[in-house]
Image (cartoon, rainbow, N blue to C red):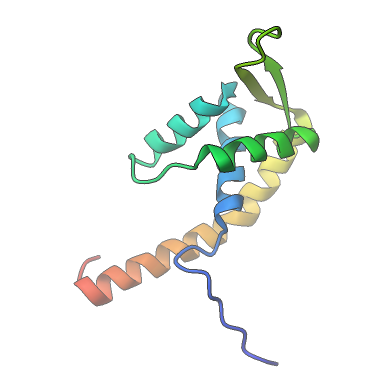
Length: 123
């Protein structure tokens, strides 16, 4: 069996997978609109990272097309702010990927902690 190298570092989870998980996680708690999702992820990650609008909005459209979330316009005539909430199907999908991605997040944390300890003598 050939040894395939994992070129993805430091996370074993793609950014897209991570953002999808986080969007569903937030919408499982309450409804949000796009910029609120960006701001909330940034806050929860202690302002160390935030997804771009170019990632969030296409992801929201994709999740809505798959019926994992439903959206509505705050002012339908203006179509400026679209709010989203998770659907029953989205809740099932969220729980599936939450379980599926947990080990990858733990592996990523192990990689970072090992590097900090080895290179910087930090734990």
